[in-house]
Structures are given as structure tokens and as C-alpha cells.
Image (cartoon, helix red, strand yellow):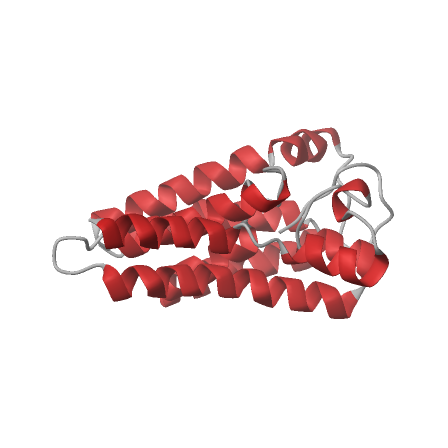
Length: 206
């Protein structure tokens, strides 16, 4: 039981390492949450710092989710088959509400991608390709991000995956929609920023 608690806590702390905030401090001596959209994620890193740092942040945020799930798998045992899912969720929670940065983080999509890749690669591939298509057609990263998250539990349920996986994906979908609630309003009002467009307010993003 102690190992389980340590795995979940370690996953949250790992998720709390906000690379977008750290890169902005290192490269520009700024708090990225006070620039661009104010979101501590890869999309805002692209806006504020450029392509190179944004790609690095995106990959490192994905890695947080992957490592958390692998940690859960290493410690799960026969009676804790749900632990990898919980560790993945803990890393996403850490990214969204990082203890190291006053609990103000990003929207968790990249970390979600990482966790779900480690848990269910094929469903993530299907949902990811759909999201990329939506983004390519609309240039709304927020819309693609939410579609990705909402599709995951549907695909897992259709594929007959284990219950912990399905419920974990449901939580991921709810988190994604809640974190993008301002973007939903902007999408409905037609004021949401498009990828590569000029800033109108808090945009989309991972």
C-alpha cells in the first residue's frame, strides 16, 4: 500500500514539473502565464517562445504521462491493476495544478497523450489522427484537443477495454472539457483564436 501511495504522489509531482514555465524563465526571464494566452502549455510556448521550445515542451509533457504510467505498472502487482491509470491521471492533475507553481498550470492535453499512449496506443492513435484532421481543417487546437479527449472513452468502450481504462478515459475527457470551458465559449461566439492567427484572448491549446 505504501508503494502505491508513493507511485501516485511521485506521478503528481512529476506532472507538476511545468516545462513551459521553466523554459520561459530560462530563455526569456518571464512567467509564460503572464504572456500570450496565459496557459502553461505547448501551444502558448509556440506563441511566446517559438517552435523549438514548443516542440521540446510538447515532447517533455508527453514524457511525463508515459513515465507516470510506467511507474504505476512497475508497482501495480496483481491486486492493483488500476494503478497505472491512476498514476497517469495523477500526472495530468500535476500538470494542470502544479504544486511547484502555485497550482496554476496548463490544460493537460500533451500529458494526457503521453499517459494514454502508454495505456492504450491504438485508441490514442485513432483519436489522435481524428484530432489532427480536425485541427488541420479548422485550425482550432482547442477543438481538436477536446475531440481527442472525448473520443478516447468511446473508442475504449467500443473496443471492450478494461473498466479502469474506460473510467480513466472518462475522467480525462471531463478534465479536458472543464479546462477548455473558456475556449468553448469563444468557439460558440466565433472569437476563438486559430493556430497561427493573431491573439484575441485566451486561445486553445495543450
